Figure 1 (cartoon, one colour):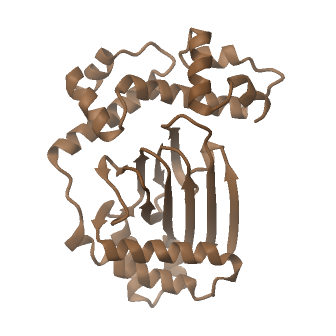
Figure 2 (cartoon, rainbow, N blue to C red):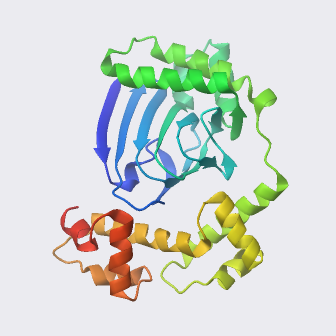
Length: 301
């Protein structure tokens, strides 16, 4: 079993379940710190992430991988816009989680080719991959508690975890996903409509992030009236559309500064590239959001 344990502020590492696309955004002002443990024991990847601030993480995992995810959060969390708390388990391959404060996210990812190769004769294994791809949220206190406890046990054991860990966790997964049909949480039409509008606006923001974007532009992009769109963002994201856009841009600037060469990069050039034209306001917002000046990010990357 291979293990990696670290603490970091590089948002590109937040979701490390080998997805094909990853997006990460810090949603709460402060100095980000994420302590994570990732362990690989064929055919599973077990991970635990303790995140000290509100965040939005999204990813589309590669076609051969799916996962079960539980969360432990004293603050509100949402999965694809639906409430997602300590009593829930998510099963699927499309990660989309938002929190309003600190949280711990625990997951078991299954590599389907390895699953078929190493557990050919297991009825549990043959059913796990298909059902894990359902992108369902299960509302079951006992199942969530068992999964959370198992992931923490394996992560705490590090290299000393028994070689039977894969079989034990697979059996636990099989027992959890059997409950998908009976305990799946249905999403309301209103929530689906709001979530779809927010996703459409997020895509529009990313495509035009270096341009001037207004609430009217976003309303036209998603076909929803301004007041309804504000309500949708507050319900799904916990922020207004324009506050969310500002934080999206600030995160983009930080990501670029973390990867830039300080000898050939100017903060003002990066800021204007992402739509910030007033450097005084930008520097203030950046410091409030990330707990340091943009020049410090560039020099201390």
